Amino acid sequence: MMMQIPEGTVIIRENEVNMDMYKIIQGSVEVYCGYGTENESILGILSKGSYFGEIGLLAQKPAIYTVVAYSDILVQRITMSEIDEYIKTNHHDILQIMQHMANTMYNMQYSMNLVFDDMDKKNKFNAKPEEFKEYKAFFSKQFAKYNTQSSSSRFIR
Picture 1: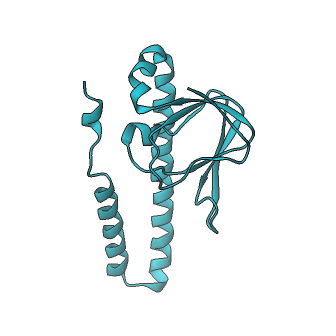
Picture 2: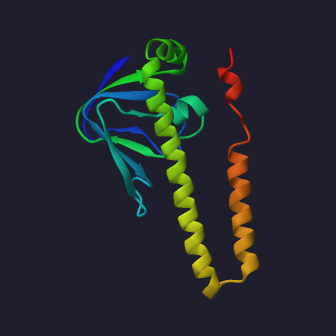
């Protein structure tokens, strides 16, 4: 379904469940982490031909970023009930979607490594090593807990 979205509209909000994927037909969107908070960071700007929302649609997990219309945009909205047909008729776009997801995962891992490196450096001056190890273990457990529910069976036909 085609949708016109005005400039400044929040299309996807970080940590909220979004089950739709969008392809930008016209215009641009901004992608943020921590949107509207003191930790707000722009991750990038996507434009014509780009996809967003694929993680929520395919993994059925809360959004990992906020997407805001940078200009008035025209998007194609793809829902869970439409994804099979979309893949069949737009198979050439699947590689682009997969590359975007892979880049997102790589960037997240890279960012986590930077945070841990920074914490490790600070830890050498401020905290006991066992406290840092406990924090890393807590983070790993939280990440594992978040990913326990596999949605892969939903896509097997």
